[in-house]
Length: 146
Image (tube, rainbow, N blue to C red; front, side, top):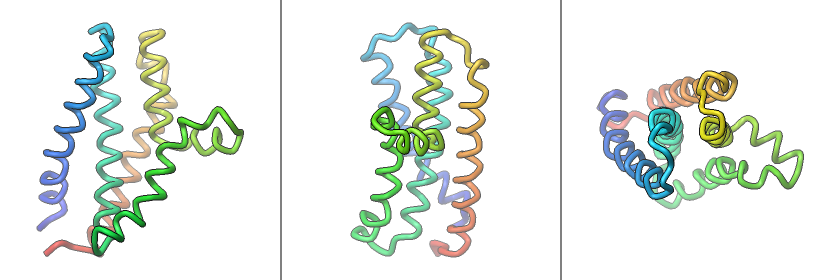
């Protein structure tokens, strides 16, 4: 199986499910439809990052138990933005994470409406896409699924 087949096979189903859930949340919250395009764009970028991280964890794990152990730290790190307001250290860590920047972009878009005013947040998200893609490539080349 090539890396492209792996990515397409994993991302189509999982990505579709995650984006469907995101859209369900969007419509459940009754957000104005003018925000749907930025919402889809930002959640799609974040979904790609999360799927790459999940693929990396899956490739590094030998079994389901090891997946839980290896995945625990990244999962906890991605949740840090929820607790960032409590300490400066958590705020500093949070500023490096894609979940923080996704939340910031969505909050700012909903309040002022312009995606282009959040260049730094979007840049950090795109760096995370490239970074996670490169790490995935390295891990996949070492742990092929033949």
